[in-house]
Image (cartoon, rainbow, N blue to C red; front, side, top):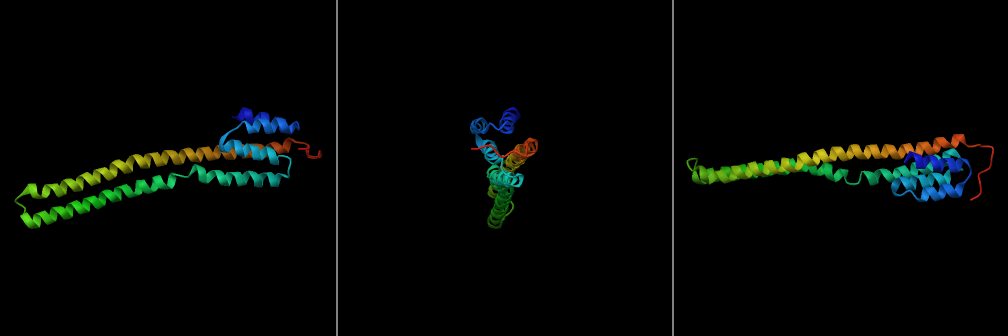
Length: 170
C-alpha cells in the first residue's frame, strides 16, 4: 500500500536503513522484491537505482504475462478446430449422398449434425477464452503500471534526501 511505501521512504530519508529494510522485508510478492531492491540501492547514484529497479521490472513483466499467449492461442485455434470439424462433417455428408442419394435424409443428417456440433463447440470454447484473455491482459497491464509507479515513487523520493551527506552505513 502507499502508506507502507511512504513509511519505508520516510525511514530512508531519516537514514534509518534498518527500519526501512525491516518494513520492506514484510512486503511479499513481486512488489515487495521491487521495494527491497529500492531500499538496498536507495543511497546509490540515481542512475544506479533506476537501473536496479528497471531490472526488477523487466523480470516482473514476463511473470505477469505468463499465460496470456496460451489463452490467445486457444481463443484463435478453437474456431479453426470447429471449422475443421465442419469441413469433415460436410465431407461425410457428401459421401453419404454419393452412396445413398439425396432421397434418404437420414443417411446424411449425421454428417450435417457433426458439422454443426463442432462449429458450436469451437465457438463455445473461443468466446469465453477470448473474453478472459482480454480481461487478464487488462489486469496485468494495470498491475504492471502499479509496479512502475512503485519504482518511480522510490526514485522520485531520492530528490528529497540531502545529497551532500554521505550514505549511512549498512
